[in-house]
Image 1 (cartoon, rainbow, N blue to C red):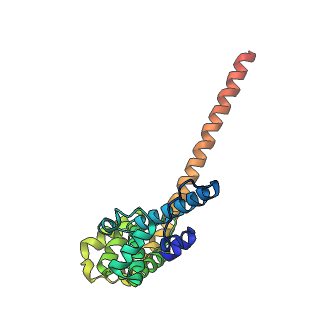
Image 2 (cartoon, rainbow, N blue to C red; image 1 turned 135 degrees about the horizontal axis):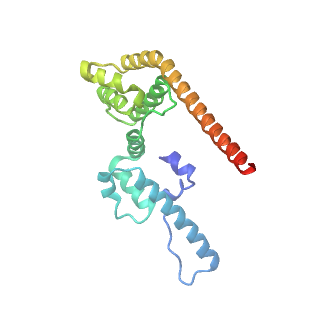
Image 3 (cartoon, rainbow, N blue to C red; image 1 turned 135 degrees about the vertical axis):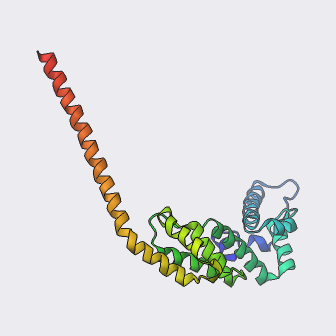
Length: 214
């Protein structure tokens, strides 16, 4: 979370009190206050984005980032607060995780396992069975048949993540070339059909031109 604050240039804001404008402020004081208020709102927004609904209830009435940050630190401790907020952000990203269309099995597993390891370092108790289910839910459509087979014939609680990766990589190697061949054939067919259509249009124009000349 501190890294996010630094990147957004609001790392100091969560640790300082936002002083109100004095009576009859100068133009310079107005400008300085406006900039500080903007930074504070950004910091408060970042904190809101990184907490779940239960934690948000604790800071919902906070009007400044320092107020919210102080409440979280008192509730969970400084280090625990950072870890909890980071874990919430990682969980949100995990929920959106899915295999990309141009991604290999090995690359997807590396990306997913790296992310889940970060979650575990922040205190997540993600079970291996949950990770297996996540993979099976988020593969691309070309793995649909093998996913059905695995779910029907195996107890997911007994599957090791490395065994699942090996099975999917074997399927990828077996069917990857075949799928590529089909895609290539389809591309050739589309290209040939386009050529035929253009040829017909050209012939019609030619015949129409001849008819006018006659």
